[in-house]
Image (cartoon, rainbow, N blue to C red; front, top):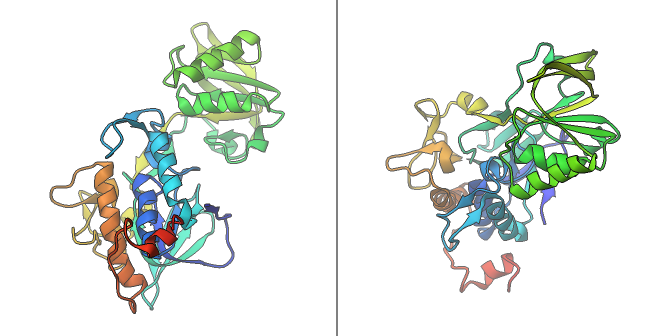
Length: 350
């Protein structure tokens, strides 16, 4: 069972390890930490676990995960969530870590843009290539409408109930939310620059069926402008082959993909390689700051391979190194899950 932490907590949440990034490497780190009796919180800018696998290519086949001849990004995420369930991980999603500080006693204080404060003995940076930020359409006056009537993700589906909704995009996210929200809204229009989509064939077929039934409108075109006042959207202007048209809507969901940036991590005083990756040693994947570890694609060392399985290996070694920080008075005993009753009890299989 996992736990979602509500935003803007008034008191610090204490954990053994704060993991920045809930992609495959971050998720597997929960497993390795859990075997050692350490708890963790996963903080991610996305609204769901899985990182790039779940957000950018949920249906894309992956062929180099040991024991899986082929597995999709979403399937891998689901399996990892199943694997770490016995350790009841805590998730703080839709959060950006804005500040990382160290207390006099050596513990870390992690702040997010949602007002959270996390207290941790060690920090794992498993942020892949960095933080994800939505690509925003280049429209005049856009900022006034953002997070009021223009959105880039569904944080609260009630925000769209009974509304005249416009969804823009041609990928899995756009199609998935089109199919999911169509039953809740007053009207729904899907806009994409062409009639060719980058989504699962079944989703495309389901969307086209809704169009044929008259439950959904599809327009081939692009956003050209917004109309409204005080952040309340009244209509959008669309550009297509016939020219400009105005469509009355009061909510807009735009799915134009994500920008990947190193973000605030660049300001944490860590030793960087080319300003884009964090230098680590290969004994425990520690950074230049004691107690902070970097695992997965965000780290750099001689011979580094940007593979998910490399991140799994790094997570295991970093977890053992973190144990010595979180439990300085305890001796670390290396055990195998196949023969240790203690580990099997933690895994709830004993």
